[in-house]
Image (cartoon, rainbow, N blue to C red; front, side):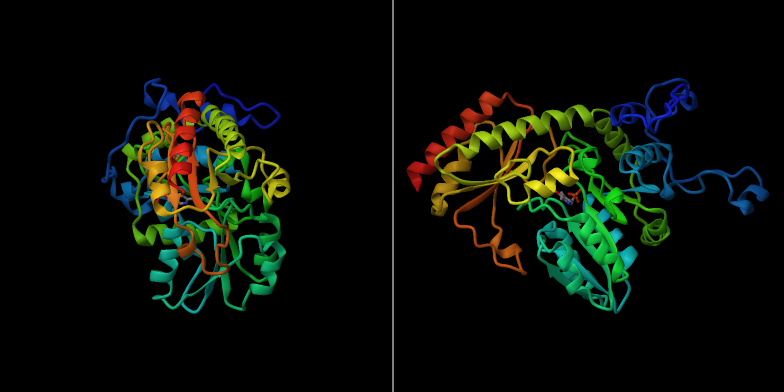
Length: 395
Ligand SMILES: *Cc1c(COP(=O)(O)O)cnc(C)c1O
């Protein structure tokens, strides 16, 4: 908090947290922002200091004031005991998983989870002698029946960032805890502004900070926020593996976070506007957006979320590959690219069938994912309308 910022009796609003948490101008000659700290070596004055190891910083790999600032903000937002900033969203997932698992254990992963996280489980955890099973994202309390004696971690992503199933976090947490496992939730879509999984029973929350926190498609970061009970294992594994985030990257995350509330509000309104518009277009057979009443998990979303993100899916009527190419290849404003969360809109065709192992993806037609950025809404609709016309002609 800034020096003269005193939280009122009631909890400060997220807007106030975002503008005042995690910076101490009085430590930096009054400059508003914490500067970029670049540093490996931290000096000790005396032998006694070296031996005592009690000074705040010992070696740069454990963090510096720039990374600490980001961690403070995210902890406040998530209501977490502590947060660690790591080099990418994927690193947040891998460290969180490894903090719960050892050889002989097993992990249950939502079938909707971020694909590189699945690849880590299949390609690395399996090699380390850890069992990997996938579960239907809509399992909820049904997870209890899937828990095995060695299940020590459950990974959820709500909503799934390609298919947008909302997961029942309280039910998953209850089932995981009853079986002696920790629940890890990827909260990248809603950000902590619109969904707080720790308050719903999760043990660990991860973010692809690369997306909404950074907000400008120009840096990588991940965060891991935990309860007090889960913290020591996360920090131990991160330390052992040597993950470190530079002050340069941390500065960009902090800069992005300052405007997260107003960006999320704009993203939410714009995405909903475009999603509702798409629902009325002839070529569109479904829009997958949890905040729309047509979404199968809408009631669950209303129960557990206070807002929605920039990202949603839509399905176009069945057509050959040429029609998909006609749709995306000549867009003027929307571009194709992985990632999301920046100021620019993105539209990505998704090949979901090969990413599913629990239940085959049976929805007919071509799936796309849209990230709605800050272009004019009429311009975006014109771009999409022209693309839909090309699709219809090529179909
Ligand atoms: C992008 C993404 C990640 C991974 O983040 P990186 O910083 O790209 O490693 C994890 N989860 C979700 C939901 C994502 O969209």
